[in-house]
Image (cartoon, rainbow, N blue to C red; front, side, top):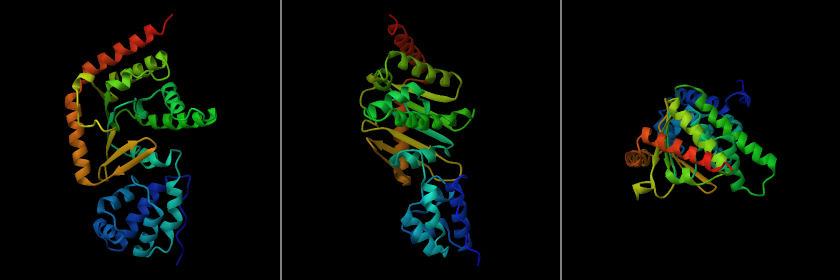
Length: 279
């Protein structure tokens, strides 16, 4: 029998690996739930591996080879599918983001990466790593700007962001950088490319006081929620957890200003930053 070939790293290895997994599972006559139970994960996790929205870990690959009788195909190829330009704790979320049909995000302290400007991204990354070489900062900024190309498509993904007022008023990179950053958000909102709401200080206590929140929906895979902390990140696919986080997001949006009022506030703050930056 001909040995399966390694995946081509120049292609989309995660999508190809997922397609191979679906083929091998169906050939074995197993449902996603049945295969998941044999490698101690959920059926939805298998669906996400097949859709390319989740990263196949080496221990999963080894068990899949054993259960599906694929020799060492998944073990050999999961490394190629795991390569990423992003930090380890964020890589899987960034790659899932690129496949999402809808992204809903609450940002408590900073402007989210998908709607950042290069200057703002540079200021954030420099704050994270004050002693990093300039070429390292350049690489990180390039990676963040590569993510923003998702918005070049005029219709998808649907991006809905709730910004905490603190993110708008925290002067990051200087007043001119903030003016540019807020004008960029306003432009995206006026182009109807992103829905933006501002959660004002006077909203008081709310459902996401304990951190940021990102929800992602997909065309052919179960939804995911991403939690992020300082240098850490976690993707979660548990249906009950995802449902709870969706409710939290809806309550946040209900407490926030309307998109129209939010846009007016963002543009007013951008003008203030620009004027106050003048001699």
